Image: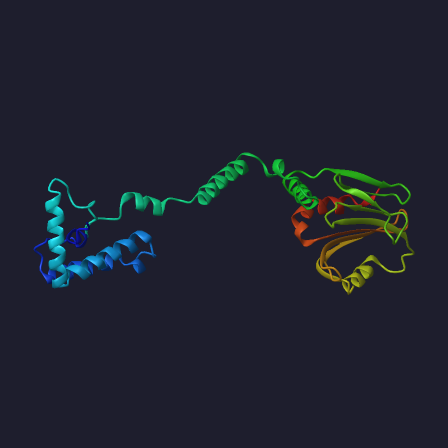
Length: 285
C-alpha cells in the first residue's frame, strides 16, 4: 500500500495548509513539462497528484488513514512499501545514469574520430591517398619556390643566340611565328617562347620600343630600354596573364631576337627566381 504521507514528504499530523504547500513544491519540481517529458518524472508527478487528491479531501483522508492503520497493524514487523523519494531526494542514481549515458552510435563516432586523427597525424596525406595531377603541380611549384632553380642552356646555332631555361621545363615545339624558335612549358600554364627574325633596320630600337608601349594587347607596368635591347612587362589583356618580353638587336647577325614569357598570376613568386636568368642569358652565342 502506498504511503501518501511519504510521497508528499509530510507528517501524518500535518494540517491542510502544510499538505498543500508540500504538494505545490513537489508538483513544480517533478512536472513533466519542466523535465523534457521524462517518464520517471511523469510517473512521480502522477503519484504526487494522487496523494494530494486523497490527503486534501477530509473524507477521503479519513478513509485512507483507516486503511493505512489496518495495513500497518496487520504487518507490525514490516514497513510500508518501498520508500518513495522525498521532496528533497534527487532522481534515483540508476535513472540519472541511464538518462545521461551516451548512446552506442555516439560512442562509435567518437572512437572513429580519434582513430582518424591518429592516422592523419602519423602518416602523410600522400601515403593514404594518391595525388592528383593538380596536386603534383602545386607540390612541384612549391619545391621550385623553396629551392634553387636549375637551368640548362638552349643554343640556337642557326641564328646564333642562346638562352638558359629551367631544367624542369620541357620543350613544347616550334613557335608559330618563326621556324627557328623554340617554346618551353612547365605544365602550369607558363610558356616561354624564343625566336628571331631577319630584319632590315629601317627604324631605331627606341622607335620600336615606343610602338611597343602603344600596343593595345598589353597593360604595361614595367619598362626599360638600353643601347641595343629593351624589356617590358605587365599583363596581357586577352587572357589576363602576366608577361615579360625582351627584345634585342644583333648587329652581328643582322637580326632581331625576342623572348616572350607568359604565366598565370598565381605563379608570380616562382617566376621571380626565373625571369632574371632568362633576361640575362638571352643573347648572342
